[in-house]
Length: 354
Ligand code: AKG
Image 1 (spheres, protein in one colour):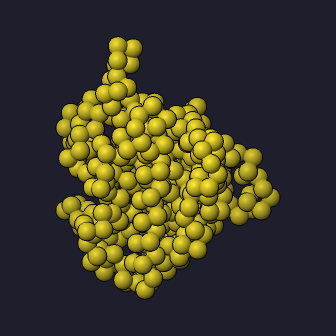
Image 2: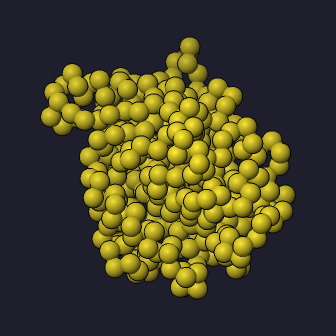
């Protein structure tokens, strides 16, 4: 099934967006600021951003035990309170991030016909490649974005035919980035385990250890003539264990906290790290999987790079037994990652808590 590319709509010069992209009134981002170049220049958007915790990991390797403990405490606090944090000095170099972003942008700068060579077919289960959301709900709602999706980890399971061959640095830069993110996954899962009083490898082992998977999704949000009516990515929590997000410094990532949408400040070099559903379940709700969404912009193309870190499909994920006692009964039923995914993304099976 061929989807309409949002980029082609944007290029057609339309002044009003098709009805499938107009969100119901309660979902529209009217109560929050649609950041535009003017607001950015006069610093106005800063007034409404900035609360998402920032964790500076400088000193993790060489700063001694006290410094490492302090960083671990901040990661755990942000995960309990917000489920999202902006991480600085995470160990991934600015030059590698610049290469990853340049490669993704160069791919999306290609004419649409050249990107179509990589088109996915999500309706028939071929989810890797270039795509646009198909309506999977009765109201036929669509998101204002095109994307590119492929497996990043483990390396032996990659199907390189689904990776872009252009630009020439795409494969090398994306591979190197994946290796660096994989190290950070261990650091964060180890921290989250230890902060619950468990052995460092406990969570990572349940989440598959060597078999843990990572998927890359590049979200491409073209300029939108009516950003106050649309969403780039609708509100959701991630089905993953952890998600790592970079973007091109056009604001739009929002987290729902205490009844309000909070826009993440654009901090060069920062990685937005999310707790996903699997870590929320393992921790029996101590760490929160944050509800978030992506806005679109009238004046600028927004691009983000999300790496979803998932357990293997057959991994059984439920609250860790060490955390369960009479006072703390399990808040979630154990299920395989596949069941969780099918239920949440494809609405298969019985309607339960998640
Ligand atoms: C997703 O890809 O699941 C996102 O939530 C992306 C959010 C963003 O682009 O800011």
